View 1 (cartoon, rainbow, N blue to C red):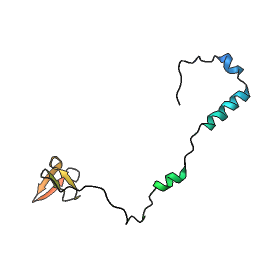
View 2: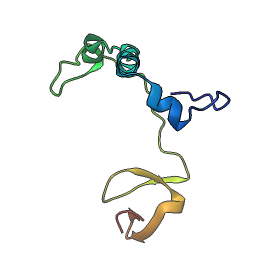
View 3: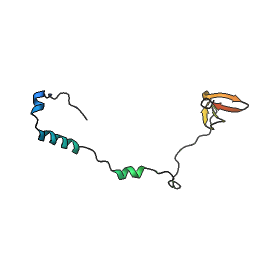
View 4: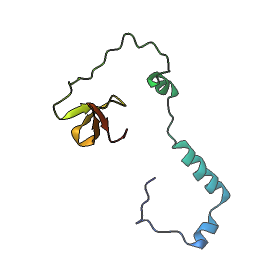
Length: 98
């Protein structure tokens, strides 16, 4: 909520003079400014586990392993050579698995 710091502030005497009806009206006005969320829109974007995705297509471009990358023999993920921890008999292991 934005606050205007240039508006004059009320003193204690001004606050005590506010009637109960004014305070109740202000509280009702604040409640009217809340945003309604359409739950139907949220449900449309929610995908449940086990949903049928057979008609969906991937839009990801897959690149082959580059010359400066290796496949870890433990986790089978492709890493950059800077993450190589050990090489035992052709078995390359990344720093995360070492």
